[in-house]
Image (cartoon, rainbow, N blue to C red; front, side, top):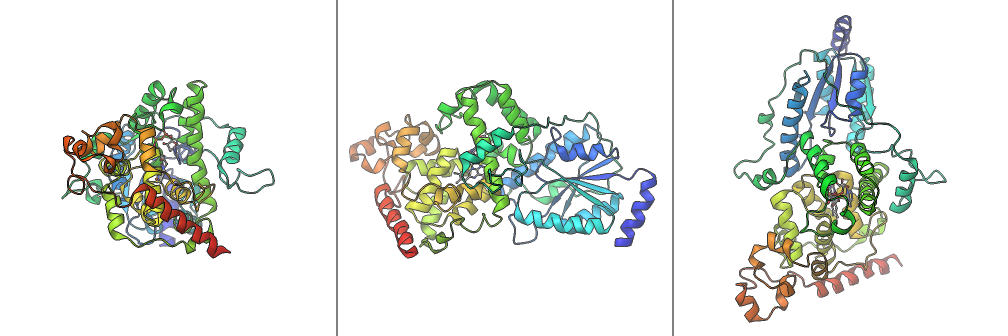
Length: 490
Ligand SMILES: Cc1cc2nc3c(=O)[nH]c(=O)nc-3n(C[C@H](O)[C@H](O)[C@H](O)COP(=O)(O)OP(=O)(O)OC[C@H]3O[C@@H](n4cnc5c(N)ncnc54)[C@H](O)[C@@H]3O)c2cc1C
């Protein structure tokens, strides 16, 4: 194998050996430093994507993310074709497929984005060594983060574990490098054989549960640009006031585009700066930095997806409650705001940030079910599933992460609903069986007198579930469990 790569490489060098552009989660042409690096070699560029989802033991894309990936790759292949390049698809172990592709194409360099996932980092290091042994250079570029996580350090050279000083340090550095433009053409060699995307079976059938996703999203770079444009034109100015209202659609909905790298965080950041100063802009940049902080945490704490950052949480008395977990997953807990969020997630592959916090809090605090169960469900159902943001956010809600909410902060889903979904638009949309209830009882139907329920055609326990755990009782139980953790540490 080694010698065949060398032979082939030597043969093709004479006729301008190509470089491989290995796309992973930077599925775009605009501001893609890996693409710019490949083009900068002056050689023909062969774009490839490897679906490495067969080996157990790492976080392969979940169901909703696979649906997204299918459509994103379709869009990317068309964009590449319009510039003269073919996207080559392969499925299998990265450690085999990339060297195969290098050999087949006679490539002398591989350009790729820095991986953020811990398993992908190990994979990349091993691959870099293998390729070097074959005389092929693996060149990594920063494609997914604003900053190199190894260079954002405290005044004493340590790592940040609290968000606010981290964000301050990022602001102080600023973005210096300009975005790389979309190339007009991508000189490309004749491509080796490619898998057919349709054969990968990334989209669901029997049943096809993705109708709501298709109605909600436009995966691909053009969709990402459109989402950014719409947000800048409409919602950025009022972002600080409307971002917490789930019924208002006041956020950018860029998260799946950012997760798959259909738009660069740098492009989004600079566009928000160019839109002009204001409270909306400050708040929005702050959220982009939460994304950055999550990636930073994953980089420095590779066990973030599995292990609590606060080690004492290993002893936390999580309950084994399959029925409670199922009720939560299906949006049948009997708590309207929680159910609305879980149904939004199921129907659209996305959930509003505030409602993510409330649904997550209900699972880990009211139901006392481990954050790992919740993170796994989100991983499977979110189109924007991102290992850093998902793991860091779940640990934050559970109280075991960096800069986490204190354990006694237990979101009350009724008060949260009354505050952030005052007119009930969100709950009525996703829990239509409660739509006729007056606002006063919408977020706590168990408090409604029988005639009010009857007039709204609600029968608790029949047309809508009774609460699995009532907010006050759940809060008491959660506080007791968290205090037992404190006592066991004494
Ligand atoms: C339990 C839980 C799990 C989550 N899992 C994910 C996940 O898997 N993937 C993911 O992208 N986000 C996750 N988030 C963060 C956040 O909810 C989403 O990023 C946000 O709702 C996306 O909507 P938007 O694009 O309209 O965000 P906007 O409000 O428009 O914010 C702009 C961008 O900033 C980033 N961002 C915003 N809020 C956060 C945050 N709190 N943490 C990290 N980044 C943020 C996102 O990339 C987002 O697209 C999670 C939050 C919680 C509480």
